[in-house]
Image 1: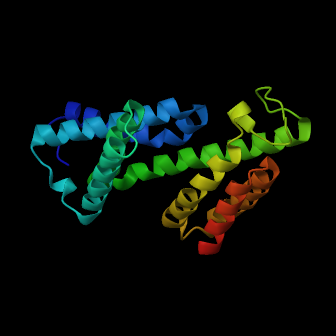
Image 2: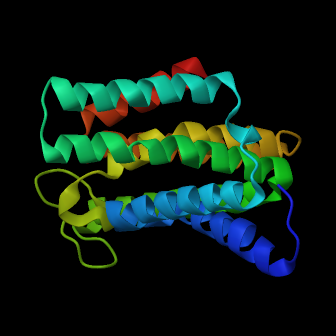
Length: 221
């Protein structure tokens, strides 16, 4: 990626980096902000490509496979189970491919921002773990959400997806901790402690699918 001035860098690099780094927080609030962030990053990247007349980022085998899969989803929505909602979901699925290419291009320009993303996940994991155990012990979390139906939810409230959130972000969190802190054993041991506490919390949350996923990730690691 190349930028003519600071204004371009602000719009096409700094702003997408901020949105990307905050996705772990946005996921806690619900699907709207996280989905909006992905969409904005995708749109800004596509505008950048049009502005620079540079589509070299898309010339790789992974994007080709994604494009074929996207076409399959569109054709499936059109011919097999046609309805407006299905077609809309299939069509806008394309933004995920754009999002991945956008993040790769941002990393190629300057990969330092990946630390910000990692720290956001770290803060989310730490706060959710502490709050989850607090809710389990006291019966409610720090915001007053009650511990009901024998399932811990922390800041997710009635959605009961604490286990799903932790189990799906843990492989990313663990992978980045290895990349960023592989020579700092004290930090790495701390991350292992967070994993153990997260696994216990997922077990207490009663989400069996999430418990399976995090153990599967641990076995693969």
